[in-house]
Image 1 (cartoon, rainbow, N blue to C red):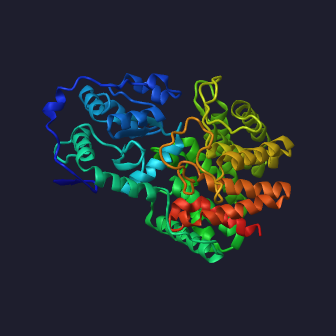
Image 2: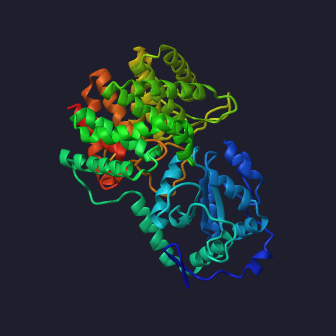
Image 3: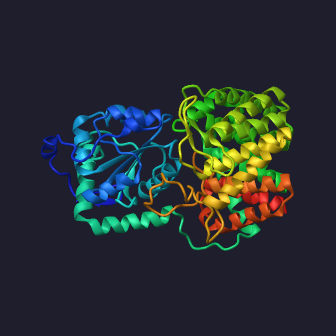
Length: 515
């Protein structure tokens, strides 16, 4: 016996027997039917990739096999390496199809799936990043996984040719321990901690101070400060400084911003290995806009204008590009707020026109915003997730604040109504990651409420900020009450999460400031 990760697995089956496998059994590669180019390209691979669907997991249950879930993205260097060097191997493809049901997911098409299993892999292996390679039971619970795996590594046993037989045999012969492990990871990934109760101001301040100290330590250590976690933490520090005027929060925030301003585009290029560059820039732009408001330092104003103009040009181009509503709206919200704060009327007009185009494609009154638009004129998918609703609502509120046009306020109000109708938890405050009526969401494991940051700020954190911004715009206290209930209900999940709770803590600070 030897240990692989933290799961004890038997020694590999002889590879000679697997070399004779040439049949793919009941599986057929279904990637040609995919909506995104990233998935469609995998149609040529000798692996019988399945879509993320009820049918794939039902097939795994019928065959009594684990699921090999692979999550990648176009903006991921090591995903490209695995596609070229690992999943193009015919022998490996035959091995996978004989032992597993392989399911492939585009991180950007299904961020809810990606976030769930990114958390599971961090719990299983202590690893973060993409690609995600994780093995699941037929009900969708993770029991073993990691990120990048090479094709063949007989010395360490970490190549897929060595690991796959071990994982499959462990699933067959150690089923009870595998299921027990999967249940534990499932509970932990949903953030099932002891209830924290109503968060007190001291608790919010303590958690915020932990983030401040972590950023200050990173500054002193010369860490790469342009990563998303420090960008989000800087937003929290600036919000806290605005509320408290405590310079101990402003100092590390300015250190992060000065590092990025001085490094320029090089800092973004060096930090965004697995992150869409526009998401990196939009987060940075939000910080620069807030810093300009807090300090009146013209360096931040000038940098914000430059970043916003670049983003406005990039997001305006949708020809031959798959549009994800949450990502485009996140960028547009940042650009619209920056344009208003820096007085750039031309950029404001352009980004408003781009928002109008996005709304025509993904929004209809009384219905959830749809996540995906394929190509320049393709239809939108039937899938709807929390990030789509809250990011589009935020962009509309930014457009309303910048222009005074009432229709943007009405769209934001309508989308909050959709959240309450389709995403809300009937037993507690907060919103689930996907709509209850979403026909494309497999009923595998219970829905989660996103509280911790991932590629985008956490869905519930953004929902809270949307509610507070609506309260300011309309004067209606019910929105502020909704934000308060959300912050209170989700405190247990955010407590102790460190930098990943930055956006949750920021909305808590906003709530304290708006008392």
